[in-house]
Length: 393
Image (cartoon, rainbow, N blue to C red):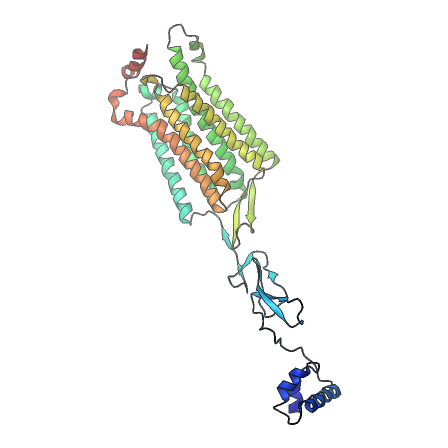
């Protein structure tokens, strides 16, 4: 019986293998031993098992078997599992994909749960952007308070205080709307963040465009015999702001009606991450919103460029020119940068563009005026403002 239990490990067809293994156990000629063992196996019908390959070792977990052409079935190569697949047993014929929401480890012998990723307030990047937006919103609020306090001074009254206030309020809101992009995407935030950003920025750029046009018309109307006087005092700046902003409102309304943004998950973009974000719904409408803002900025930039040589009393066009130059530069560089990033960094790029372009408008247009109001009150007089015009005339 000991002999029989030993022979369960062998297959009769592999006579050479049997001979080599038992020749040292049973005496006598090898051929007789082989014949004797064959008779025993046939008589008792002992279960036969496939022998271990003598061509190669086992294929370990993390790899699969690949048959070698022209060699017996027990000879094979071992190949590492491709990206996204694993094996957790020896000598598997094929690698298997990981379940949804998991990814292979470095050895491709087990699956690990994917990490859920979004731009959160707990991240250093999210915290930095949120803090920056709040700081700039506070600065814009302080500037608005300064202009309200000194509303009766010539430098504040020089170019439609109401448009100036509306511009400052829209800049405060533009800084704050960047907070909608931070945190786990929800249905409401996905609906609001792009449309709020588009409408608020269209109001801001429309205000800048209206201020630029009014400044140029005021200078042209100061020339004796000019017919431009009839265009002033008719709320032209209000019409410009309302009409330009209304177009963006219509675009955003159509966007929300036909294909609104919604929360989405992407499990294939990065191998070891599940990325939470907002699907923009209609990509065409998203870029229409951005291109319209860029169109308004370019129009305002060209108008300000034409009036950049106006005399010192109307030098606000110079500040507007540089502010719109900054705005256009930021958003022209936004498109290639946005398309070349992935996951939460795409959101971070858009937030950075919102903050930097808003800061450019705030700094270039209002900081020079705040400097005069607070530190050089001697220049904040009607006589000083009229000096340049008299010299020009």
